View 1: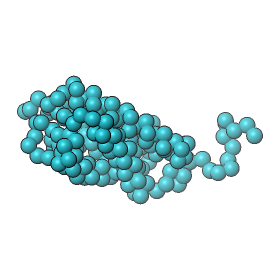
View 2 (view 1 turned 135 degrees about the vertical axis):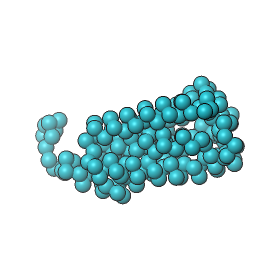
View 3 (view 1 turned 45 degrees about the vertical axis):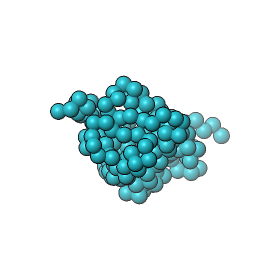
View 4 (view 1 turned 180 degrees about the vertical axis):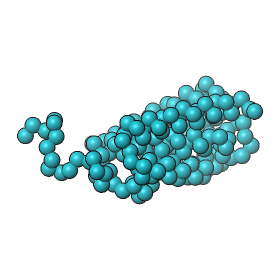
Length: 179
């Protein structure tokens, strides 16, 4: 067992709890939760290609493996993480529309990149980033783009947010609407 395996197993458990919590608090239907998981799988598949490209271009690498992609235990974590992100993004989009989606993806890009660089500094045996702002911008674009992919696949599987039975209908009055 390498030194990174306990970290990745713990992260998988944390993201499994995060996904269960997201399903509960977003009140996702079984179809929506399945769509989010399928979106997470799509991110995992595309993520392998992105990591091979990033390794080839010298943006980042995984010192613990000799392959251009990450350790295999990263991918279940990635699937669960982006499934949870897709559910939260779905609720943000349902509540705030496309403007909320833009803010959500922008915040996710910033927070995700800071998280990645934090873990790179804390566990250099896990991942090493090339120096420079370009690498950070690519990482941020990956966070926003992959989250968008997960939400797109979830929408394709489960339908648009407004199609859900508890979605607000245009013209209906809410508690905050005092017209």
